[in-house]
Length: 121
Image 1 (cartoon, rainbow, N blue to C red):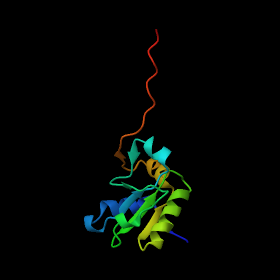
Image 2: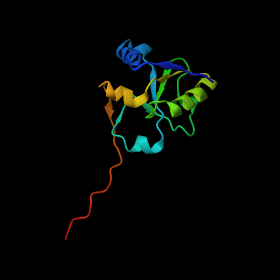
Image 3: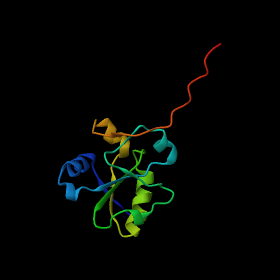
Image 4: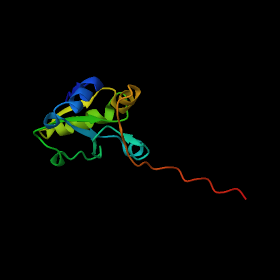
């Protein structure tokens, strides 16, 4: 199933626009990139890409899905599943890498950090 795309500029404009018309932004990154990242798109909600549950998302609002792959491989798969469940969905072109490269705003989030090395004796 083909899915629609949205550019980072268009998404930024929608996020800055009328609060009642803002899309729901869905972070569909694979587990490792998600838990080891300290950022996400503003207001993003997390959906595990292995089990995209459309029931938790509104059917009366636009949904924008992104991932950490500039080719949007995971986001396209999740968006197709959400579209099949009746959601109005688009994929962010270029994903998180293009958003960050354009210096657009992000929200901070907790990330898994490697443990500190043991002290030298």
